[in-house]
Length: 175
Length: 248
Image 1: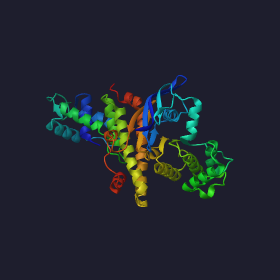
Image 2: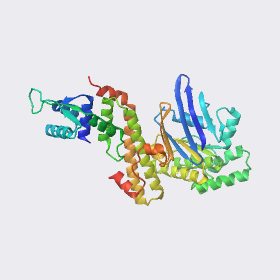
Image 3: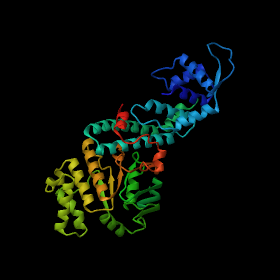
């Protein structure tokens, strides 16, 4: 999963301090692996250097860094492009796709449309593999079967997520 | 040029809308898969295309003429002569033999008995059932029975075959064999095929895939060389490396 783009997405929601950003990231995307503080600040530093975010002046308070970070237009464009671009269809894509769907809902972007694009990308890949099976050797057929079953499982997840978008929208809404 | 087409079709059952402006077209010899979750309207769309349901609004065209405005007798004749059907369950007469079942629609169309049974034997042979012609279909396995259904649909030399969840009751390998035969023979004959399925592996046999959601077509994924398919981002062409890539 792309940590910099996910942090950028969270900053598009609203400007934030590194500490709050880490807490929010961990709550939604870091359930099995939390983001180290060091990585958060290093990433924010790189994003600021590359013009994706701007850092405000240091504010008084505890902790190593009390700067408030805000996304720039360049950063916003990058998040938009990333969300709209289907993930390459392969097994184990759910983490990235999950992050995209969740961020899209947080930002009020068309998550259902992104899921449809992903579904189309998956169906296309499945058609390629099915065509390959028609003329392939048995070994290729077995490999294609393996890929097809994984892609099918992804598609089921996409279908179920599509059906749960309204529910998910509520869950990620800023209280 | 499309052979069969639904244009902005609406259909409700009581106060429940099943289709809310669905449009789709399939050309001569094209294999079209209609996907969608339960209750999405995908089977209703197939039934409208096949002239089984009459839309409340919108148009259905077949072979250059309006299908939805024909009277019931004309539509029944069309279904008997130009359309073949393969369903998940129950389309065969279990007390009759496989050959009887395949010959039956030909006889109903006033075909000669000998010719009807010759045609039935030929198609049963094409589907690997040459030795099953004399067996009652109630005694056949699910996969064999479904192949008889495919033989029966193809024996009429229809212009369009409509298949509703054709592998729904079959295990993976048997389902794959039925799909290989159905789509392979349909391609050989140049028969347009419309398949309703919730199974993405079945839809992957099609040239065109549409998704129906809440009574509307939410995407229409044409052959790889069409702009719609390019929009849907197909990152690679079929090759062994693409298989390896997808598996790894």
